[in-house]
Image 1 (cartoon, helix red, strand yellow):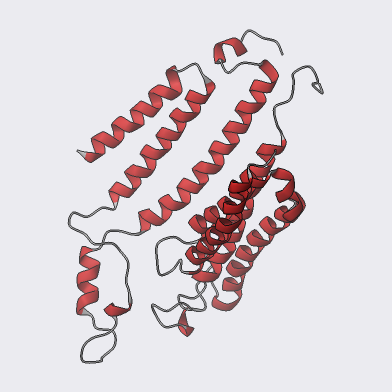
Image 2 (cartoon, rainbow over the protein chains, first blue to last red):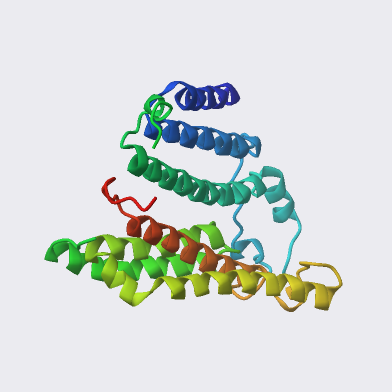
Length: 127
Length: 149
């Protein structure tokens, strides 16, 4: 069920990128598609009833003073959410920011040359 | 690009130091807490963007000019490649973690080459995003009558 809603979000972004005539609305549609893709990657690593994949020093210490027990670490591995998709999606969000900056600079340049944001007008002018 | 009123300038000059320190903390503790190089680099760049919005672009360009930021960007990429090639020299495989045998788990100085990679990536991402915003503000909207071509 959450995967169907993520697919619906992707379809909303695709509708904006294909149907709209204003250039800025196309850019917003592309950004919504990026959000849907990152959300899908994070949802793949989820585990129902899981804990956050962060360790701290209390995992290494025991009341008897011994170091590195195996039982809490095994239960942590069995209940923790997968951290690898989260690290990759953090990278993907920053890369999406960079590509959005590139598209916005192209929109600024087209507005300087043609004087309009409407993509149907651009086809008729010669510049 | 002009600056803003004196209230905004005073508050921005106090807050920018806190944002920069927060970004450095997220980079350095990247192997213990969530974050790492990418998120910390974005926070470093956003402190400079706050300075650019409050004081104007010319003030920030005197502080950190475009060639200097470009050199810092290349330095971050070169550091990252150097760490990877040293893995090939010391460990036999490209990009292997050759310092992990000297470290104890869950301390600040641990996990081998991962904190060093975080620092290099943080420097590179911060300089790149600052350059992107600076370049977008330099090429402002010109009148269509004074075109070059």
